[in-house]
Length: 593
Image (cartoon, rainbow, N blue to C red):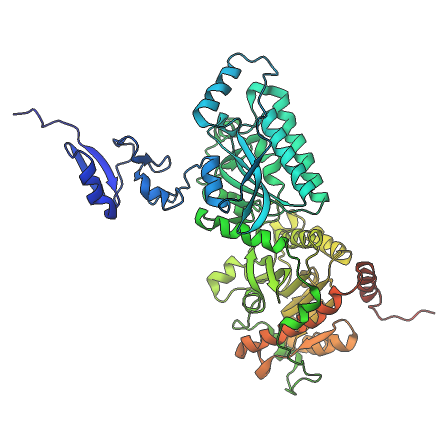
């Protein structure tokens, strides 16, 4: 009578749409089916051979056909299950366009490490690979590129002599064929069995990447789980644009090594893709189902062969009025309009003026400042780099955007994107809208002054056209760090000043209450700066207020940018730089005896 009382029940999780199919194919004795629910933590489910896989992150058992239709992404925890090189090729490369290169390079045993040749041979037979990376040429959404795809099934993707050689040859092939390079990383780091030879591959591949950079070609590493050790400390972090799959493990030293060294428990999410995005080392986290499209879009932008002669013709022309509609407003009234919470932000204008905006993140040093947004976009079919200072619409968003006051990371991110634009001959458009650079302890510790200074000097000599527009508050050096440009425009009710009127009154009169009086004498309006010759254009705000007519204002703003940029694109770059220098060289009023 007690025969079945203590018999252990086995649990299998099945998606609702596969329930009947499972019942028809699998024996049901001692099996409880859970529809859409998980098994208990730590419980090891019974997995029928061939039909099911277990997610290594959440432990759920997943029907294989469900995985095939979801890019091998767990439907329970969204973990991106590791792919083989062949699976990656099938997901990313256009069908029939893949040609493998650098085949038949075999590992040797430079240290005469016992058992190493046998291990390599066993993995060759098990995986069908000759090494931990596959390289070739293929098309991603019709964009030809050189690809390297690491496969963690082979020696955990560790980098030995053959991996380093195949990667280096792929870089050299990209230079030879004038093609961009995409590398999917998946590695535990250096290959211990090859010792110093493994270590030196880090330098070899990194040196090759520097040659690719000199050739003006794009390099995109796509970080997949795991990307650690010597791979992280070399080619994985050298990309022009660094993408990552969600929840990827990314780091140099292992978690256990760090914890044992510092005797501290590491925080949740440490060394994840999301952690590195926050810390400024990853441009974008892309879900696997969107990866091909994202790569194709970025490659297409960098393969641009359009005629710049048609740049200004691709837009329906609107004539900017020579004179603004007369609205009597005091300077302080314009200050209040510039600060108005409903006023359109940089992103509001970017989303109307540009097409296919791809936001990029991070300064590659410390963090990603959400007060400064930037990335790639098209303006009338021409690739451009767009950067803007971003305020919030409500308290929550303003806290996220630091009330429009950039930290050093924001300026360094902006400069990184500008240098990238210079490399690929993309014009730069900047939107300034800030009460000023953030003045906090952390900002000073991380070099706020140095970050602003670098932007000023680097923008002065940046070898690509720059147009900057003050769309709201142009607060002191915080705004100037985005306005060293060939031409500076201001919206009709924007302001640009050495300091806020309140700060000006506090310093000179020790009374912030005299801000209105200060605004009247500081000469901070668009008309004042136009009269001084500091800015080139005033962009009208229909209805006298951009917040009342955001789309109409954006159209006029676009027309102003297109007109100015079309002239700059036709200029010789040396002449452009000379004129940019002279623009700022002549600013100032003095007498000389």
